[in-house]
Amino acid sequence: MSKRIVAALAAAGVLAVAGCGANPSEVDGGSGGAKAQGAGSVDLKQTLNKELNAKLPAKVKAAGKLISVNNGSFPPYEIAGADGKSLTGASADVATALSAILGVKIEHVTVDGLPSELTGIKAGRYDFAIGPIGDFPERETANDFVDWVREFVVFAVPQGNPKHINSITDTCGLRIAVMAGGSAEDVIKKQAQACVQQKKPAVQVQSYKDQPTSILAVRSGRADAFFSSQAPLTYFVKQAGKSLELAGTGKANGFDDLYQGAVVAKGSPLRDVLLEALRTLMANGTYKKIMDKWGLPANMLDKPGANLAPRKG
Image 1 (spheres, rainbow, N blue to C red):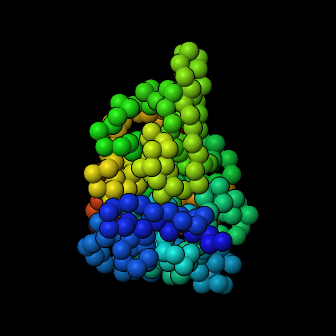
Image 2: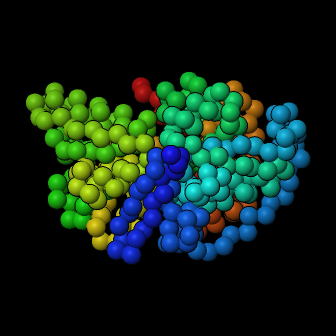
Image 3: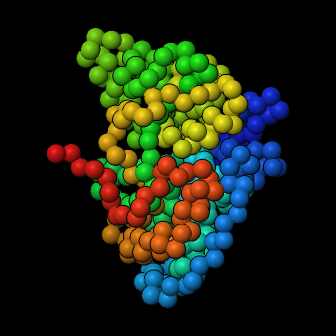
């Protein structure tokens, strides 16, 4: 069985999903390149930083490469090709620029779901994930984050918002799709408990391994909404034509400030290397050009940071 779910936009605009991975490929022959966004070009050439290159782990310098893992299902940041190695999107552009600064090749590997990404980094199979992946205190116990975007969590719903979802408080009794292992899954499960405490029907949480499958659940009527990050949901809604829309925008929806970024193993020297390299991209304007290219200006940070997840109290 293939490890990819190849999602293609058919002539009628229907998202078809097959296999058991994730790939929102489009009508470009399955390379995973986005046509709705990212049409412009950005010069990703950078000046080699010899000091940062010297700070890379010995095994990285010996191999001449970093291995970056992704789950292929986070457009317009990560859009993986069907070969399990090629990657396009904002994250791919950032990785290309980082590669030039650090003086090593960055290879992309696609795996099946976020838990596999984090487990593989912890086990040393992969050097890092360019992400962006949600930064939360509980994840920082085993990982270090280099945050380079801010995100918001909203709903993708059928056109017209028939269930009248304006925030997470409107989800009691509804069927809500989420990505398994993600932060939205934790938040919607807490909301399900809150509904019961309020003597309302619990949220029916549907956990899927990737974004295309979750979107398909909404489009096929198996779920009332998909609860996830606003940037990829905006991408999928645009691809869906008039069948989907966003709901719950401009609301906290159970989250504090949500930072997302690259992930390395806890205590890895890569954290500070990536942090400094990202500072360079922000300072020289490359970061802004990449984010503008992929329609992400609202998600930009003024500067990157390490482990920015808000703490309670």
